[in-house]
Each structure stands twice: as structure tokens, then as C-alpha cells.
Length: 76
Ligand SMILES: [Zn+2]
Image (cartoon, rainbow, N blue to C red; front, side, top):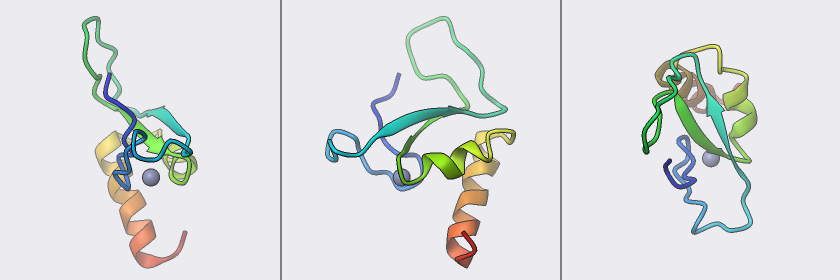
């Protein structure tokens, strides 16, 4: 499992101890039966987890792109 680093803004939970982080699993999530971090499971900080959860029906790559497009156009 990776340490909590927001996959959207890349803030690291170890540098921001007051931020809450949560895991979101996307459509491409595949459980693994060995140590490591599974595909399709991403960390998000409290500022981005809500947006990520609305896109969990997508694969993680397209979901991240959608989040970046939304932020870039200011239609959030
Ligand atoms: Zn974030």
C-alpha cells in the first residue's frame, strides 16, 4: 500500500498532518493478494476525495483526466 499522497494535487499526508486522506476505488480496481498497491485504487486528500468519488464508475486514468479538465475550466 502506498502512503497517502493525493493523486490529484500530490500533497503528501506526511507533510500535511492535518489533512484527511481517503482511498477511492475505481472501475479498473483489481484486488491483489500480495504486498503492494493495487491498480485502480488511489489516495485523495479531503479537498479532492468528493470529486473523485463522483467518478468512481470510470477507470482511474480517465477519472483523473476528468477532474483536471473540470478544474481547468473552472466549472467545478
Ligand atoms: Zn488533493
